[in-house]
Image 1 (tube, rainbow, N blue to C red):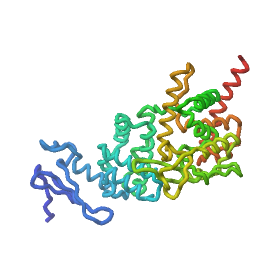
Image 2: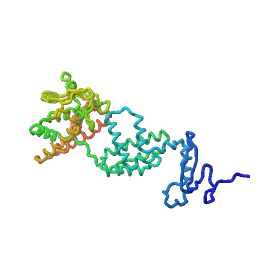
Image 3: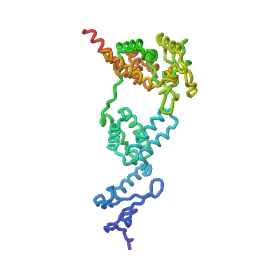
Image 4: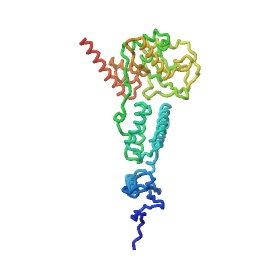
Length: 396
């Protein structure tokens, strides 16, 4: 005589592992890939069943069973797939703990953004490409820049690739083209023309407020240093005998104060040549009668560039100085200057040498570019500028 089949309250036969509780809820019992007993629940046995009044609509038990069986067959870790996006991102970061302070800060900001968004608490197996795209739209609406969203998306995409390797999920919901979801409104990098560069320096040289920053700007224009590399320079980094600047650290500042970090990339450790004009500017900087109110920062002292209170000048300060200086210039000049940031000055230096056909590998070294394509892209841009200028002069 065959064993009696278990049935639900609608007299339907229940399969192995299935049961129904007194409150009407269905349960499926199974053993995961690690040999542990697990349970899933549903208010419907079949997809065609109605969800009981007052209960949240969800997949039916049989639908959940098919997903579980497929995951078990494919070796998917069904428990790992239930971790939240925040937990996945934390797990990814734990794989590479020894990173620079700047990177740690960036991780903290992204984690905060995830915790503030509904996606952060979602299980990773429930996140679809449409969810990821909607996240990008929400980030834009919250005021995040395209570049920041792009960086965050890249980090989350890498986190999901780790999840795929660990058999938590099958697909990567962040594998989409961001520019097809939100508009790339990033301002393109624009170098100053030779006329704009000279106008800027002439204005600074004769302005009562901004002439004290003349040498700082000149050095940036003639060396291509990153602004945090300039801020970190000390007396011992200058080698006048060999006409070179030793770049092996940068000075940064966050809400906790100043700190020293390694250059942006390994290629950032370099010797940057000094022209005669640059050496003269540094000599003038050394003659400034400035007294530092900070004795030492992470083992470094005698910083060259200080503000009026004796503290080292930092990136944000130079950004403000340049912004206000351009505003003042444009109020009294018919031909306006464009927006200028410290990076504009670095970009101008690099573009100028590319226009003069400097060997790309040498320019890559001077700039501290980790990827030669960053340097070669400037040559393509410079060729366009040069062709335009040459043609206009020939047909004038």
